[in-house]
Image 1 (tube, rainbow, N blue to C red):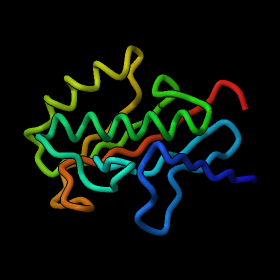
Image 2: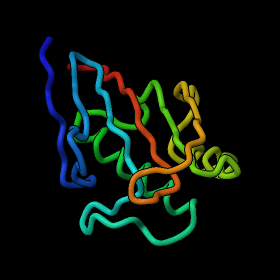
Image 3: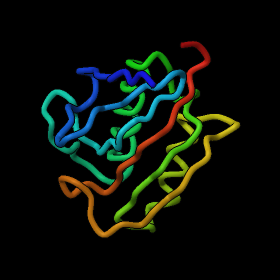
Image 4: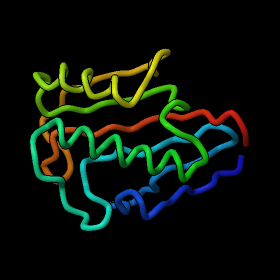
Length: 129
């Protein structure tokens, strides 16, 4: 098995012992993204909707660096510190994803890195190697 590290400066740098993404064959495993702005490495100001938008922008940048896009994502895991934000997640996801939507789990957690309100990781399958 050959693993390829995916990295882009268009998404936040890793803040721990992980890669932004790892590609194995046509499958890309995208690490969790929180709403950090890549240039400043600080959380975006604003409400949960702003945080969700920034996370999806970060995921888009990593997916692009791997040779794909959000339409290639087959599985999302979404972590929320407040499950009352679930409807906002659905509303914003409709702007970034179209049918057939990826498989998804939404998990309520007590805390996330940097006190963000949301984190999303993903699995993407590319159509070409």
